Image (tube, rainbow, N blue to C red; front, side, top):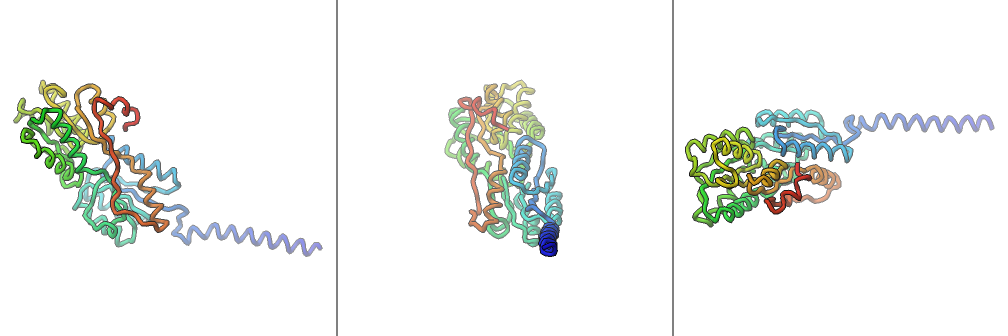
Length: 322
């Protein structure tokens, strides 16, 4: 009986030891990782929209138990390509890429493809073949945003305006599409004329400087501003005030993004309207990753449903705005 009990405990201890060994060795069999590792290459982290986007990705990764490796390209295409190579070298399983430029980030897609790492593009497109160079693009309908801004501005100005266009990052799909949508729509209204267009790089300070430069040449000829994002619109408001022009009265402004400062400017009567471009990509990105892991079919483009804010509803959404 003593020998039988001894054998029984030996077997139990043996099984326990085997389980301990398997627990230690199994992660090594999967590259030393106990979690799925996701890389996120952000193009920059210098304005409310990008900060909200980054925070959404980080929060969702933590919520769902993924390990996230993050890089900030600081607005430089060359650095973003190097960042992608760095993330690939970290043995990531998926890459989330927010491309600064359309053509400029094509090499980054090829780096990931060569390493057989699936890519999810967010908020901007990059030159590559959908379904082959990347799984999907999750983005807003930028053409619709431009069209919606144009329709509102036309009605708000009585279908007659001399417009300044402040454009976003040169070479980006978002700047190209917002401009195309806006220009296509105002062609329907002969009284709506763009009298100046200048790059503000989606930044408040750069947008302000661009507006100051245009005011010096166009002055009181300006009756409207279309800014490709809220940050540039807020910069333009400051430039107009400094020049003795009253935003919302002398000059009607419309922009895109839907950030909290823009909603405050609408309530203050300085900004006329803003078309939402929601930066909270986290849930949709990780939904795509989990569907891909299950082998489910994923559309090559997922379009966000965005809203429109003006004086009639801005106060109702200001608390939830980023």
